[in-house]
Image 1 (tube, helix red, strand yellow):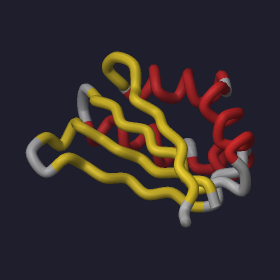
Image 2 (tube, helix red, strand yellow):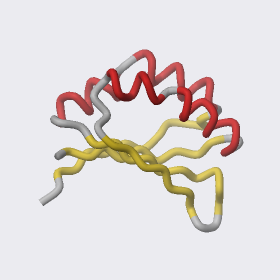
Image 3 (cartoon, one colour):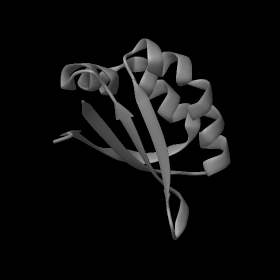
Image 4 (cartoon, helix red, strand yellow):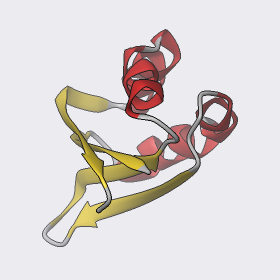
Length: 89
């Protein structure tokens, strides 16, 4: 199962988390099978999120979606995120 990692800085974790949690229905509709959120130990606004998908193509489509871009803007993401895809072996 492919996993997508997104690492970004947010202006305020609590505000970001509210938007993220409210985005759950869109995540599921776009193929997110499981997700997890991590904070850097030394900076609560340094966030890494994982999303599992059935295919890499579904993950790539999710990244390109206008809904995700809008949610990230509304959530206070600072700068461009770092995004990568993996396959569990």
